[in-house]
Amino acid sequence: MALADTRFATRRRALAAKLAAQRIDSILVTSPIHVRYLSGFTGSNGALLLNKDLSARICTDGRYTTQLAEEVPDIEAIIERASATALLSRIEGSRRVAFEAGRTTVAELDALREVTPEDVTLIPVTGNIEAIRLHKDPFELDRLREVAALASQAFEDLLTAGELAEGRSERQVAADLEYRMRLLGAERPSFDTILASGPNSAKPHHGAGDRIIQRGDLVTIDFGAHARGFNSDMTRTLVMGDAGEFETEIYDVVLRAQLAGVEAAYAGAQLVDIDRACRAIIEDAGYGDYFVHSTGHGIGLEVHEAPSASKTATGVLEEGSTLTIEPGIYVPGRGGVRIEDTLIITAGAPEIITKVSKDLRVV
Ligand code: ZN
Ligand code: ZN
Image (tube, protein in one colour):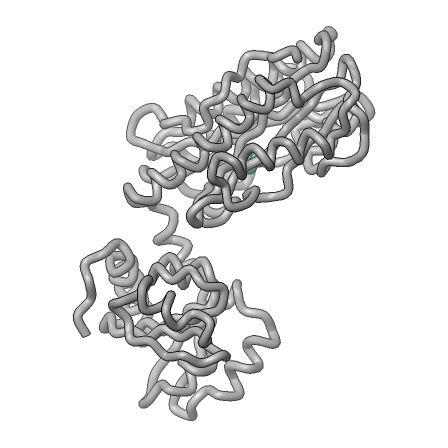
């Protein structure tokens, strides 16, 4: 079967090459984001069987018959409700068939085993598709720029409208921010918006609760938009009314750490060194015990994906990947600061796609 020369075919070719190198004949792709990544199909139920010779079959249920034909004109389609087992049960001959071990539940695996033809051996694999996703193509980079710009604009609009204000609850402000992202084209937030005020800002993953924002509070807002399959991620911390000595000091330390992390994030850099660049500044300022998470993560189809910049990271940062730089200081009972940008990694200085000022803003 002839493959259309699209980015999806290019990705399938890269995956097929990996399969051949691993002595695997076929891969059964069942996670929706990977089906989409490899075929362009955006439905919620579907599976793709890709063979090492690049032949493929895709299966979904009757709700998506028309959509599948429109989105995936170049892969043989099967319409059946149980898409993964439908594809697996049709395999003929002796074959080693990989499945996505990290994205398959025990129940799903049981169902696969029940229909596996006698001559087929199921091989658990992880990371094959993720490794290809690490390198974003120009289409993906444009989508990531767009969704980050959209979220940045929503944040500026929120501040301009005076919606981050003393007397309002965290929940109200978070809802306004999510509404503004929607108005600008987001399909949904990329994750539950974190809006952490006052003492709550000392909890890195506080949600957005009923606390009323007060004068003197640090307010950490960590948020993102999801559009056209891609996600954004950014954090800014602001101060309400006026900034005290403590607030000003930890903001300054985190900002210096964040800028050092951005400077260290170039293609070829050791991931552990990027974490070190941030952490050293926070440790030197005496707040090392209060930086309780890693420095950054990749982002794309998922909010958290490879690579990871942490204390124990291995490997180097690669051109065409993404990375957040998000150091923080969290002092229990007092408050915290986190500043996060998303970067596109190049051979030179990284491209920062979350374009909101990092100067300390007093609202
Ligand atoms: Zn974030
Ligand atoms: Zn993040």
